[in-house]
Image (cartoon, rainbow over all chains, first blue to last red; front, side, top):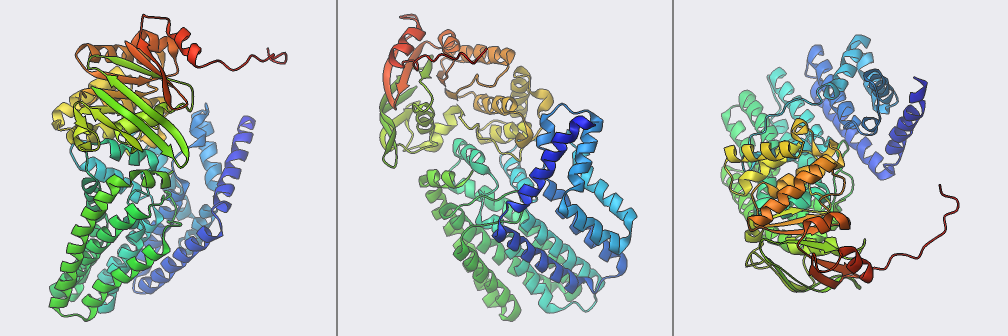
Length: 353
Length: 241
């Protein structure tokens, strides 16, 4: 066991240096996002009975801690026995400040037994290593699978998922679902996912971007594959919101939310394709997005308000007009950005680590 | 068939590659040699469309790379310097993704991918994500990707670096077999002994310029190489050993 001392010491240093090395701006951003998540949780959780409340917190905590741990890295390089690895993983978990938050929150709410179950849940991905993955060859699914796998490792996307989960729970529980919530939530979900839309190559790294360039694909096709991933990821989330709204508020409201969601998707995909090619920046797995263009984010925010306002106050022709403009804009942007991608590939590559 | 005329690449005021002319005929394995920083990888990147040349033209398999980049990419296989893999995909998923993009059916893709991975001794690890795989495993995957669609022209940047001896020997046999069937193979390497046994012609690059070209067998490759790329002056390391 003593021989593991230096390795454990190094892991503790790495964990804390990684945390502290994020810089004040990044930590502030993460705290703000957590605050926003907390406020949303408080808003929706008041309608829920005790048991589901616990499980929403459980999901949130496991999601955050599990992802913050990331894949097994340094320990995998050393000749460790099975017992050694268990010690290393346990110590690594114990020195992670997010573990303390998890234990504190769930321990206080639902008891220490649940904490142990949660910590085991966090370890679950490690035990699953080496599992067989079905990967049938086809033109898009592998690119789609890759983008989705990278996306679910981002906190922004996870936050959007948690918001959707809370909205659905709210709709299930609350017979008098607030109409405002039905059109606000899609905007919030779209905004939370906007970081991945605005940084389409952010999760690929430079090497992944090079592979796109080596494959026989045009710039437009590459961006289409990214759009398909976005539609599956964000469309799935918004579809759930529309279904929940439809169930509680009637099919017409479900349709309003559906049209709103589709408009949001088009706007995100179109503006995202343009921004991804003009001002690309890298996204780090297991973190909130940090950096990128402030003005691009502000424009995305303004754009997302359009469908929201149309859903809230507009007539049907306004909603459909917004949908048409968003769809046409997306189509044009994908073409323009695709050509730009082919010409400006070196500049994009330089921005990705 | 590879033809490059007046190939040049500038990064700001620095000229990485300058006026490189190359012609590699089908059925040839061509060695592209040179010291670190001589511009080999930059040249390969320009030949494969990863970098835009500052000047010059590139023609691959009769197609101008600038005019028809997708057409060129359909006919070439590339093992790039950085391997160009997606961290979030498993090794197998990379091959499953690539086959259909090159027009292979699902069955054909699976059959070829399995065969390649077995030959490169990678089949057992095929479900490892690239981000978690060792350098050698990643390199073999990138090589399998380059070969999967049976390209007419193959660009390999340091194919033997980080590869175990038995796999390296298998790779060498594969390349020789491909060239015998008419493929063009372009290989960069630092390993002069390996290159001398593999290639039929070579170019030596120094300071971004081609300083020598020739065919194997005319003169020993090492003699030609050190004639143009002098070794650093000797040092007395009394403290070593």
